Each structure stands twice: as C-alpha cells, then as structure tokens.
Image (cartoon, rainbow, N blue to C red; front, side):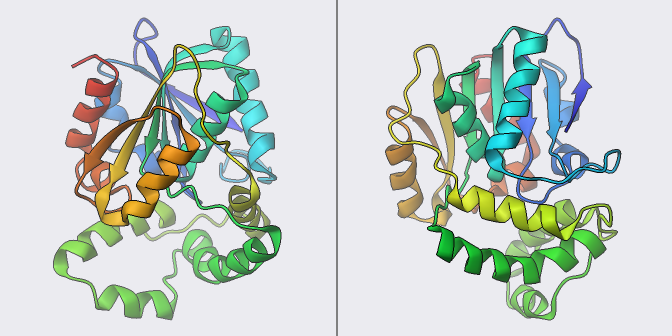
Length: 259
C-alpha cells in the first residue's frame, strides 16, 4: 500500500480512498488540484493496484488495518476529513465504525454499500470478473458492455466514458494489476459488514446521495449510519464526482465548513 501526498502540510488533512479497481491517480486526477488549495491531500493506493509494488489486494479488513496504522503513526490517529469514492465509501465506513482512528468529516461518495452472502458473492464476483478483468488490465471493453454503451443517451455516454477512463487509465489498462486482486476486492467488499447505526462522537458522516440510483440506497445509508448528513444530488452513481469536479469540490468545502 502506498500513500501519495499533495499540498501544504499546514492545511487540514483529507484522505482520498479510490473506487473499485481504480488506479489512484486516474481516480482523483481532477480533484487533487482543487483540493490541495485548502487541504493537505493524502491519496491511498491499495495493495495490488499500484505499479510500484508487487502486492495483492487480500481483504477489506487487511487494507483498513494498514490505513489505520498509517494514520496512527503520522497523524496520531486523528484526521480532519476522508472521502471514499464508491468502494472507498465502504473503507470510510469501516474506519469510522471500528473506532481505531478518528475522522472529523467522513464523506461517503454515493457508495452502493452492496452486501451479499458468501455464496451469492462468489457468483457476483465471477460475473464482475468477466467484465472488469479485461477492462482494468488491458483497457478492453467487453462486447456485452459495448452493446450497453451504444444504447445510452449522449449525456449518459459522457458519464460512462468518464467512469471507464478511470478504470482503464485512458484506455491503456493496468497490466500490473493481477486478476486475484480484482476478484478479492469485489468479493471482500460484498462480504465484509460495514456496520449498522454507526455513530461516533465528534464525527459527522456526510453522504453524497445520488438520487438517480434509487431510494433503496438512501435506506441503506439510514441503516448503516445513525444520523447521517445526507446531501441530495440529482445524479447517477458518482456522476457529481466524475462529471462535475468543481461542483463536487464546493460540496466538500461546504460539508467541511471551509467554503
């Protein structure tokens, strides 16, 4: 696991946690220049997803423990903010709920918070692998996904292309990412409980709720977090983040009281 740092160390610290199978730099390339104006930015690069290491992503808990250890050592266990993009939202939830470190502003980025039994998770991981392994490692879009993309509206295509760009490193792929890491990340995310009714004194959990995802996701947030600050946006999953980075940045400033 690696941590990449940007900005002035005098500013409040924000940790950024990437989405599923995303390379840290591609995931946050549009957000880092904005954030470092008012934050000291720390970007997490998970095991198995960094070209400078020969590691394997094992489980969500293993990665969480490493992030906790880093925050304890460098920041005495306390940080100002953390933003979890998609899968990263599950990590933020675990970091808050485990109470081994403290986050003042924990931001969940329209994460789906999907959870399954082990048997169902194995099936879902197998299916996801068929789509994501060629996409992530080679930058190849499977034919079934191409057919889906061809049916989208022009606006939906722009959104989808931005998502795919983050997964494929602009179409080049990440050959250093092993199939095992991809499968482990999918499976572990599905079977690792993030907790219910999470409520930590001194922590505000902000949820960037993408309303176009559906009401069931709001219900999940209310299940997992006791008193979440739900910020409603009429977008799809992480559409605010990928398509409107400046709007996203302003919302981060608002929830952190820095605007």
